[in-house]
Amino acid sequence: MSEITEGHIVRRFDGDLAKLHQKILEMGGLAADQVSRAVHAVIQGDREALAQVVSRDHLINESETGADAMVARLFAQRQPMGIDLRVVLAFSKVITELERAGDEAKRIAELGIQLYSPRAGANARALLCDVTNMGELASNLMRLSLEALDHLDAEAAANVILAHRRLDAEFQSCFRRLATYIMEDSRNVGDSVNVLLVTKSLERIGDNANHMAAHTIYMVEGKDVRHLSVEEMDRKLAEGPATISSPGTR
Amino acid sequence: MSTVMLENESSAADQDLSEAPAIEKASYRTVGEIESANPIMSARDVQVFYGDKHAIIDVNLDIGANEVVAMIGPSGCGKSTFLRCLNRMNDTIDGCRVEGAITLDGADIYDKRMDVVPLRARVGMVFQKPNPFPKSIFENVAYGPRIHGLARDKYDLDEIVHTSLEKAGLLNEVKDRLDSPGTGLSGGQQQRLCIARAIAVSPEVILMDEPCSALDPIATAKIEELIDELRENYTIAIVTHSMQQAARVSQRTAYFHLGKLIEVGETSQIFTNPRHKLTEDYITGRFG
Image (cartoon, rainbow over all chains, first blue to last red):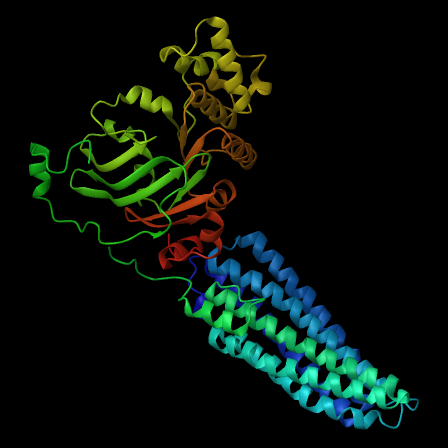
């Protein structure tokens, strides 16, 4: 656990925060695993692995309710203030992001099962080439965002937000390609839409990673960088640290 | 600069103090906005000494109209001492010396021509422990208006007492027993009686020194609700050890540490995103 969340006179508060942090990292590991399994299985056409992703989603949901209960207990027992308040608030939001990322992984798996069903068109597998790159980008963003959260590292979190732009650009590019397939041959509509939905889910997973990174910056720096352009975020982060340790002189 | 004892004034006391160890003055700057858009009271370069102890060091702070300013900090940080400077309660302490300027509506309250009796009516005070006079509920509230000549006749006095008790949220509970002793009320009711007593002399500012520390949570909630209502007509400065209370009742919060005003700012900012490490360590319970 980072020193950011340690050093309370009531040492059990340190322990409570450490446990919550650990719980969220475990949930994050589970969500990241679901995402990479879904992406890998959809590319490989592994229907069994896809079904496993769907069946494992409840683990993330259970993690969410457990972590939420810890957050509620922390608010009730400790009434956190200052950085502790930001940490618990941000952790609470990260829990929601991870649960949503888990839902998107499940959706990707469900779409994959449809794409590899006997009723799917012959081109379905070919259309999935777009998923490879986006899947790798989304999985990476999720991993990097969790690392930033693990070390409570605002700089690493800012890099995630910067890298997220590539995934957005890739999604736009996929969207245009898939739209072209649909226009070329209307028989491609069903499979193209399913692949488009897979890429949309990957784009959302990137958003989840992006939001988690913004929450990490908020808890560490006390600066809300959500809804800012990368340039605006850089300017805001350059304004200096949230707290100063010694008063200036006159 | 008017002071109780001017800085350059040569007196025996000053001579004694000049031999005391030099204490670093004006060596820091408060973080945050010390000024208020519409200040009722302003403190500038305020220093307080108890003998050779420098209890308040170079404090600058405005208290704006119709706002509640909370003063927080560990024990002995000077928050109560500063509060007591605002209506010259420290004058009664032997060896206490106040320097700097504190103004009320632009007038220096430490000016030699300032009469402290009407000053303390304009800047009322509520203490940690409820301290009603050993008189009836009515007399507790009527005493101030009577000695300040605020009531023309008995009916006028009745009106003031009833209005004050109503504003203090106590009238409904005591209207049938105004002749009963004030000391017979519960702790929370006694504290509201003290607030009614302060209100009765039409103050501009009410100072509260840990007004809820001797009360249970329900009585505390009633006082906090009252503080919120009183803000419409009065300016309030409150010293509290409860950070949750400061967060609930105030618009601005000032953090004191070892006699210095370390940080002042919007209450929401102080409790979510304090700018000074000392403030953060205090509000997050990392030192006490």
